[in-house]
Length: 461
Ligand code: GDG
Image 1 (cartoon, helix red, strand yellow):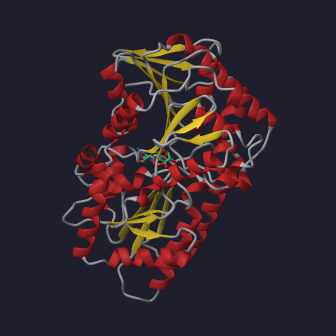
Image 2 (cartoon, helix red, strand yellow):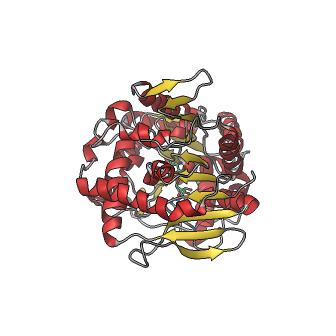
């Protein structure tokens, strides 16, 4: 690559990235090529919205744009997280259509483009992350940016029918057509994106598989994201956390780790654990405990407050019904824990529950597999609606709407013979190794560097 790399993402790391993951992969890519990482300033109303603030510099610069309280409300909590997030996660019922949200979303993207455009040279590569910035390439092209621009959507691509809930349903296709490359998590997402273009009379399919839209061409491909399995395994092998965490050593540990988000299927997971406990009542099977770590997120959005209340009610009811003096079956921790603690807890757990109703990939599934002892591994119970299920076909795949099936899967996991556990784990571990996050970043950037050039440099209407 002759120019520099420009990365845009909602969050921008303020300190040195300390653990393997997306942040480290992007940090490494930027360190190799030099460049700039642009994201929202962590403090709202902290500076001039018409300029970028340098957060840190070293091998590359980190620059932050500023969001006013109004931007945060209408762009971030509003259009991004009360329109696009539910839309992409199959919760059209939660979509809040609002002209103020839409105006703020378009306004923030236009402003970020104005701040960014003068810093982008024709030989640079721009990599934009996620649903906060769908219209950013349109805005950059309008300002004359001719550099290659790639996009990666971390969350599911919405079905065509859901797109009709947007104020202007055709926007999605027009926004995406201004990128040279649209990267998605799964083959299913790629199919959904191509279906959208197929249904749009402005789009034409080329023989090389690219989509021509007005005077531009865009490539659409899947790049399943992953983790740094070795770094996770190393953290997991550190001394056992039982003592410091007080994990009940007398019970089989089942773990769940999710931001407290309605897309993660937590109420049904708790209900399934309750049904599993009901199924074991009166038997002399060993006790099992569910440890659910669920750090809060987006609490100013009503749907997130509602899910919190619902979970507290379900876990309270189940614990009331099943607890003994020396055993609490569901431990629900509504805060984050250290990554090193998390890794060791994964290794200690006999099973992990990932029961998303919709999920771009789900990295917890991959972290759990990486953290296991290959000689005595635990069992991953995985929703077939998580992107991870497309390749991790030897996990115990479940329908997160079917409580009885999930309850049976917990029983199967905790009683699975060791040979079967090893066989399933070995397959899942191969998938995790094949999708290493550094290689993922390299393959997106490699593809962006070589994908067919745009047909014309005229702005997209
Ligand atoms: C989006 C997409 C896609 C969670 N609690 C704690 C903690 N975590 C870490 C996990 C994992 C990460 O957060 C969550 O990643 P997921 O992939 O599971 O889910 P989202 O946050 O929704 O991520 C998703 C992802 O983007 C990447 O493209 O896979 O589909 O929705 O790494 O470990 N980490 C620590 N303490 C916690 O309490 N340290």
